[in-house]
Length: 245
Ligand code: DC
Image 1 (cartoon, rainbow, N blue to C red):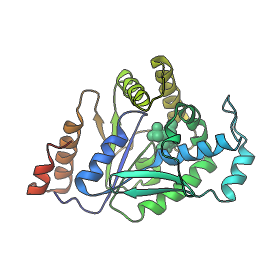
Image 2 (cartoon, rainbow, N blue to C red):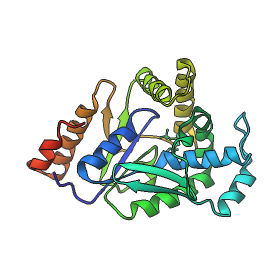
Image 3 (cartoon, helix red, strand yellow):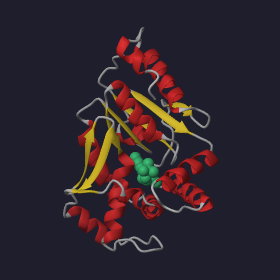
């Protein structure tokens, strides 16, 4: 199925499976996947490693700003459905997924100059088109003209269980209640901050995937895109991909 060269914006709360869906879309329809949250996580890792944020999440705003102004080489390397985040030549993809970074990322992402820094990188990446990007403000602020906007939601317990399983699979030793509390805190900060808070764009379509399998999500998305772009039939290649999710 040939989808035009558009930007697909996927927003939603933490651990709703946005990035999994975005990666599936990238693979299925030959788009480049970009994970905007990874950049906020990258800035957070940088802040932690350089002493710009303490254990109570107090941020040395002046120090962090100076350091970003001096030039932090934070960037993506995307290969179709995969996106890796780098500081300079260092691949930080696994370090930015720890609970330590997760616990500090929302306060960092609420800082306006951090958002401006990340938005510059996102705009440059999106300019190339045929991009599926996930985050909290992609459809409302980063790419308000994106041709397709999805807002993904799921039951809070389902989300906490997903994040718990993910951390366990990575060899961490999470406590379910802590993981759930961290998600609730991040949801609150993300949706109550002053600059571009998380909210559904008026023209975004909602997907509640609490009870959906990945296969059902991609079938839903395919149907949605067919309707949206008046695509009448599947090609053989796309039909044969249908069972692989
Ligand atoms: O999607 P994620 O959990 O990796 O995002 C990490 C944090 O970054 C999340 O707490 C909110 C913030 N974020 C944001 O404010 N705006 C975005 N476009 C993406 C992420």
